[in-house]
Structure formats: C-alpha cells, structure tokens
Length: 134
Image (cartoon, rainbow, N blue to C red):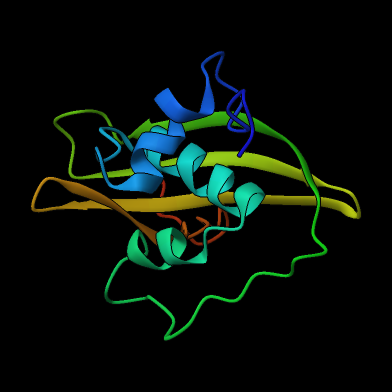
C-alpha cells in the first residue's frame, strides 16, 4: 500500500482513504467518496468500488486492469455533497499513464452513506428554459 494517499490530500493512506477501504469509516462527503474511489483504482480495490456504487446503477462486477497506472487526481469543483446534503456532484480529472478521465460525477446519500451514482446529467443551454426579462 502507498505511504501517502493517492487521492491528493496531504495525509498518509492508512489515515486517509485506507480507513474507508478497510471499512473502519465511511466517507462523510461526496468529494471524499470520490477521492477514496480514485484511490481504490490506484490500489486495485474493486470490491470497494462496487460497494460504494449506488445500488440502482451498480454493475454486477467491477473488473480493474492491473496494467493501469494512475498518476494524479484534480478536483475541479463540486456542488452539494456536504455533511448534511443528500445529493452532490464532483467534477474531476483522473490522470493515468495513457491519458485522462474527466467526469462530473453524481452522488447520493442513503442511510447516512454516500454512493457514486454515475456521470451527472449535462444541462443543455439550448433546451433549458430561461427566464425572460419584461
């Protein structure tokens, strides 16, 4: 296991995302869940990824490519997802040896636990109703 946490926060892995991966704690915010899921990709913890996926969108199996080499995470922004919210989004870029994965992810809290739902819906500025000025 890595000594420093791969999620990008300045904490040792064991006290940061490692505690979530071991089941000693649950991520208290959507952003921390997203960071812990990125760290799970880095350390190869497919079980954690599946367990933190929303039951309505969870795949039957999560398979990781052992050849993937994740190299860094950038959190670009977030909406909601705080301690007392029930939904939230986190925009990020996850860098790997062969490129970048970018997503605005949707999260939902159920029974006190945050779950990854999937990519957040993209609003279309051409179809979103706009308020007319008089």
